[in-house]
Amino acid sequence: EDQVTQSPEALRLQEGESSSLNCSYTVSGLRGLFWYRQDPGKGPEFLFTLYSAGEEKEKERLKATLTKKESFLHITAPKPEDSATYLCAVGHGSSNTGKLIFGQGTTLQVKP
Amino acid sequence: DTGVSQDPRHKITKRGQNVTFRCDPISEHNRLYWYRQTLGQGPEFLTYFQNEAQLEKSRLLSDRFSAERPKGSFSTLEIQRTEQGDSAMYLCASRPGQAGNEQFFGPGTRLTVL
Image (tube, rainbow over all chains, first blue to last red; front, side, top):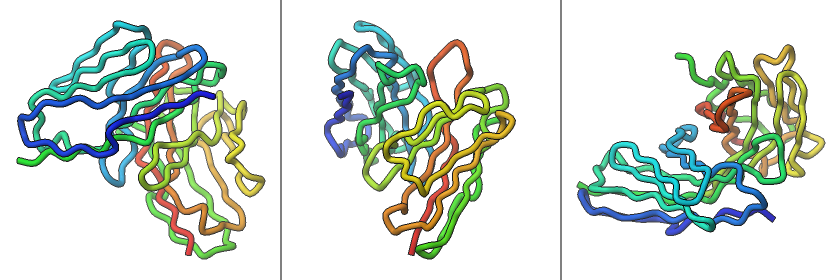
């Protein structure tokens, strides 16, 4: 059964303190690994898609990487406005519909 | 705003009542998804439309839930005889038919069943 597990569940950082969020997955035939940001009371906002091991993508202070079993979201010198829940999802391997299987998310708090 | 829109943003209802939510996808997107999200969890897939055809439904979607997408444009999700366990955020997402698997989400409808 396809499964996505994120760790840690919650992370507190001081402004400028770099760290990484982990997303471990098991899926039969990966059809994309997706990262989203979600602010309280809002829908998820798309950040990155990764398709193959070794692929990396960057956006401002965020960098996403992918291996055959996990993905990391690296946050460099975070600012308070980076505080949010970060969701990881995989494209369902055996489905042609493109539905996503999500992890439970990592809630990041960046203190000034 | 050319993003995905959902209406209403909040709905409070009493147990046993019926509710209906609407989703307007990005205009050129022919694929539409509904998800449900409870507090502290990631979204869970409910159902999928390609144009007006409903092609997949989750086992989470009981007989009390029905979704439509007439004419392949907006979609509605109806919950009949609501239960307290239906309280959640209902999210709609859309994506284009070709080139890219990214889904773009709306702001969600927060349902509270008293």
